[in-house]
Length: 65
Image 1 (cartoon, one colour):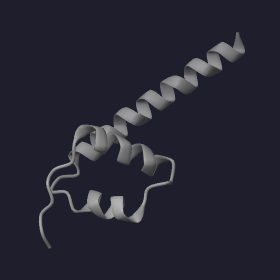
Image 2 (image 1 turned 90 degrees about the vertical axis):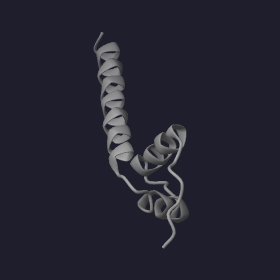
Image 3 (image 1 turned 45 degrees about the vertical axis):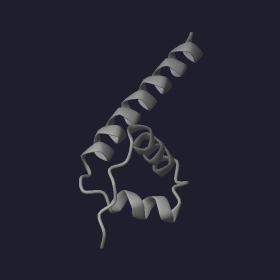
């Protein structure tokens, strides 16, 4: 198996977002799993979830008035 080059930050966030919504392509998933470290994906996932929850809380507070 050959080593692939590390993914750019924007590609990591795009990949995490696609995986969160369940629309990750098999080719991208294989590329993600071939990366030398899972840390960028873990950090991007945590950031994505925190932002998503903050958006949901904001929307619910607006709706509750």
